[in-house]
Image 1 (cartoon, rainbow over the protein chains, first blue to last red):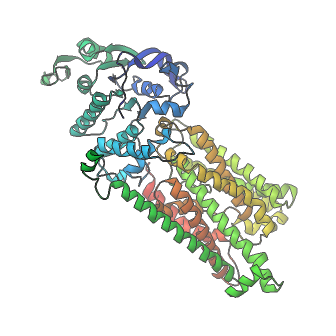
Image 2 (image 1 turned 90 degrees about the horizontal axis):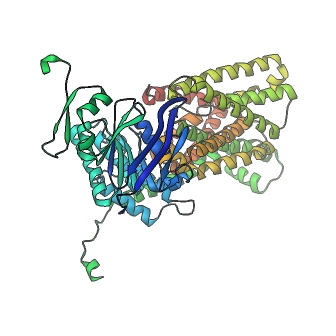
Image 3 (image 1 turned 90 degrees about the vertical axis):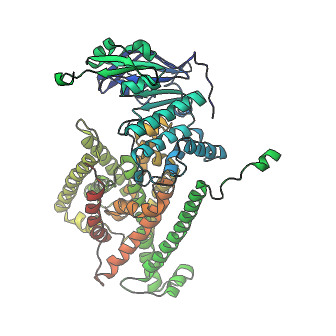
Length: 272
Length: 350
């Protein structure tokens, strides 16, 4: 399932993208390039529009204005099934009906590759098994999702998007509600997928330090626009954290990964 | 080739063997279900005000001689049994689809007000135009069901949080009250209308002839067929809109088509047998234990179990206060109402 893309070309491009819920504009006139073959992390405070932006990139939200380009074609011009062969999206904390097994869930990922005539092929089987293997879900494949731990459940959902076999993978807070060990496990898995198969990964992350560790490209979102973007060591500054998150911090050198590390400064004097 | 031969052989029972095994069991279960359904159909032909023996039924069907017993079977028992079977199947499938569409375990055409809307339209038509034929009844039922579906959708979507499971149920309950009291009002104004449809309004499969049955059957057939064709897509809807859209499903189209299917199935059921409650709610939950959550299995199971259940309920309605009869809708309510309360306690979050 290897996907090779030259890292110079864009995976997704937005032009004057304006996104709104009802009539409240969340993202305004955004021009953005998501580099192919890299891990991009979207960071920003609650309500800044990063999740909305991700949904817009995945054509889940119809823009008020502007569009998103996938391989130079507007994703709203392509059939939604065609887009689903190129781009997988894992929304924030998805829920499955009670009793759905991991295998049944992961099998749904093959939908864009099937048709009325071709319901389930040997190739579908192969991608299903592969997705289970990569995520370490083979042993749990026949278990209902509601009997699994949060981390296992999240791995099952990721397996579903892997079975979809798309060069681009968008994930909205893939580590929410997971403990630290499971957070690292999920992020390592995504890193491996990027390294071994060259998949483009775009994810919303809350933890700035994790974003710096795993992302090649960091996008700081503020008030519905991009405040700064680039490699983490360039844009992760005390000034940026102050501007975007409104807190004082020190940026230090992460001794393990040699990426920037943000230490927030508490207002409580006794901690200083 | 030589290299391949030295490779370790795959484990003897890969996990996929498990799902093949499960599917085989489900197929066997479906076979048993069909046998049960057939058994209940026979019982429904045999039992009633006058108990008949199997030989008479056989002769009535294949060597009709015009005797009273044969006439009872062909003009009373057979249409009644077939109506119970198909109405039960249609309501159960409509219920399963409604639950999938709304991602709400308490949803069903009767709970959200579609049955009440269809019933009001049929009563209204009878009130205004006198007794119409079932051909026209069914179209009024579709119209009433559609208007009720739109109303409950709009009513339940008011407010910031949109159509939550709880608001859907509340809107459905409110709408059902409103529509039912309008129906009652019309019946009070017109004694003639009341006499004609009093029994029907409580939900009854009795007193309908073959012509009525066959005039509505095509709509049910189309509804059931489209439901089966859409079953894969409905399963995907149960994962949520964003996931389904992300996988390339045209959710708006699937939802619209599935809603039309629900209205076809519920509307034609109401036209035939009145607003029978709880079958659509209860049956999908009963069969989920055997059929799982995949609608490709769930819908056939629901159809068979729904048909069986309504046949049984109708047999009960005939023999419980013999020689009098109860409307079958009262039987399903007696069994269904406690189940609804159980579900509300168990399954509704917030």
